[in-house]
Image (cartoon, rainbow, N blue to C red; front, side, top):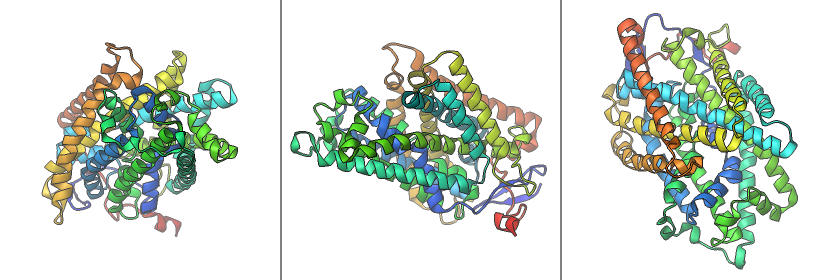
Length: 496
């Protein structure tokens, strides 16, 4: 079998693997950062996440909690991004676990990633439908269906177009958050700016576990740049883009939570935050038109967040199909040059989202309390598990993957710290899943989430075992199917 020169390693590639690729060397470091930040959707966190967390947990030191969670996730991302940039594989967790822990773990991780990313992406259709219905009336699932079509069409286009759309919406979102912070701090309750939001003693209450769980969910999707590495101009920028994304988001969310607490007073924030209109009423202090702009931007922010997760899922499907772990037909790019956007993967994701939407609409489920809350929590928990696994994989990766200039911080110390801290985050999130889901005390429903993730991982391991016995050439190539450098043309050659 031929050898494949990967990023920092030489691996075996199945002779029959398709030499198809995504449009390469088109995504700048800024574009990677945009994808990581836009996935989290700062306007969604401002309009709903922060207030819900205050009202549910009554943790007045929420700004500090946001900073601590961001710091822990940034450390967790060190090993993940180090592996991602070395391997250059669109299905990042799939390839990372395959190289660092074994091929069976890779397939298990790939399926868990598909479930997690699909869950978050599908959950946003419930949020979008409910938001549009609240503002314009109509039926929520009709609005969701319209969004599904728009996202599906954009997802099949060149990634440069999507990046431009994301950058504009993200830029406006960050501007509105900045205005919100200034409006809140500029007219504090009681006439004095309170720093209680950063008082560590405010973390020592029973609601801190729920605050951490909500915080982890708020950062969901910051790891998206790892799946865009094949399209990046500079693969090394994946690390910086991902870590900077979560650090910047941490500062943004902490400032927004602080401003919200200051605007109404730390002693009243838990009661006032239960009003979903609170963020917009604070924005009105800067002018009524800021609240109107915030409402419009919120709608677009939900759609762009959907687009990010849609793009990531499409690339996972494409990459795993290219190695025949999934049906090979899903590896088509829709281009005669064999280079382009993952069209078949995009259609597959749209189909899954449509089926989920139909299922929840048919059951008469509440689009926010059930569809959005349950699916987004499932996805956030799954991605946290994958980040933990990626840190373990970084520590156990062979020298051929790490490369000759591997640093101890990236490959040993940071992943070890990430495993320790990430385990604490996961335990807090799992033990407080009931508060995230709004389940009654003693309910068994929260246990469904880890059961779904564990069951998916087991299915992946079983499928990998089947491939090992029946299709050993496919099993050998798991996580090793990125094309040779000159096997497919670059986008610049196509245009020529």
